[in-house]
Image (cartoon, rainbow, N blue to C red; front, side):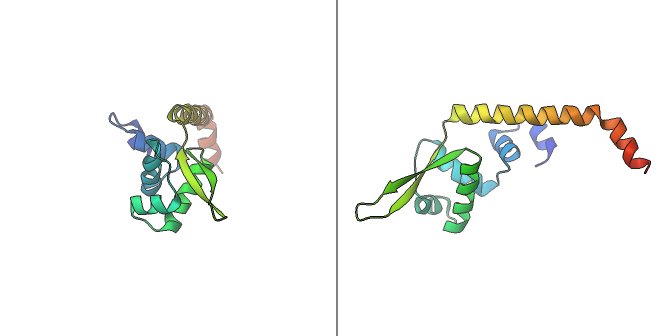
Amino acid sequence: MSLQILTRKNASCNELLCAVYSLNPVDLDVFYHVAGGNSATLDELAKAVRRDRTTVHRSLQKLVSNQLCYKEAKSLKGGGYYHLYSATELAKIKEQAEQRVKAITTSFDIMLRNFESDVLKHCCT
């Protein structure tokens, strides 16, 4: 995602989530379906976002690894289990995003401090 999109006056939460967590539109759809407090199974989410199970499963893996969602194993009466996916508490997601933005800002500050020496190093070799 381009920095221009993030620095626009009317940039949205979508752009922030995409940039900070490397989400794509399908990931966002899946996230928003559980972000309202509605837990769902893989099959329910696949139906809701009108995508195949494999695509939704990949999105859920990304969302869980980024701690935007979590999964719980639920037992079936006749044996076996299924996973129920829920969104992490929004306040916690916001806090995590703030930490990631701070880390990105720190990284940019370091790059800017080294800007002239890095450019000279590359152009004079």
